[in-house]
Length: 296
Image (cartoon, rainbow, N blue to C red):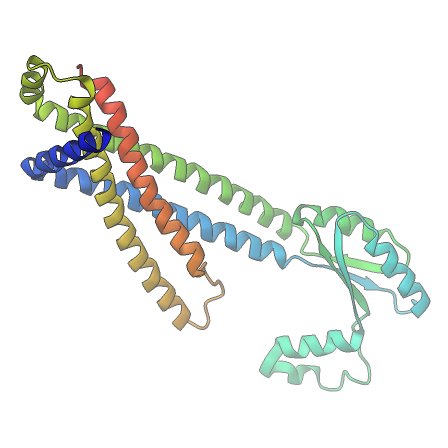
């Protein structure tokens, strides 16, 4: 019985969609725009989070040592640094290794460092990796107070601003996702409402013939689901094509400093979620519409 009713609702919904093709086209277009914008914001939020994590993982605290620190004092200082709250890893960098790293960073300009092998001005240091980026200033302050430490560098001021920016970026992306989700629901409700009003005489005749509530409401529910599927499918296809083209262009630009999210399993999960969200929003919006605007 249930399958028979569902089949009838689907046929009625498809017939009604064909009768009101211009209205359906408008509705699908509105849903497509809303879901496309929602997907665009989701991808932006995903890449913003990825960028924030990449930056946070690169945060490092450089602890420079006095030149008269003995190897025994270095080992003791390493243990004390590793015991500081929030320190995930401690790595010793000798002055020779620091000079070699500087040469690699300068590249073709490393001729400026010629002759420093015999009189290396760089100090030995420890590089600390924090377990949480928010603890960098606290770790730096505690490390600077330890004996044998000449100075501590971690990008004072820049790190704090960077952490504030990344936190605000995450909050802004979440807010935009919620905003566009609400916009998609509103557009679908408006579409179903217009569909109901356009067939008010037909609904009145069905009521006079004794049709039940769900006999009348069912086709409208199916219409919302179909419209949501068509709109979200169109938006997801365009979004997937556009993002793939963007990844291709960025991969060709070798100088580009940031690599966007490109894992297939992550992107397919996003696209499948958008398709499901579009159908879900269409169903929810149609349910709200028939309850508010369809008096049966």
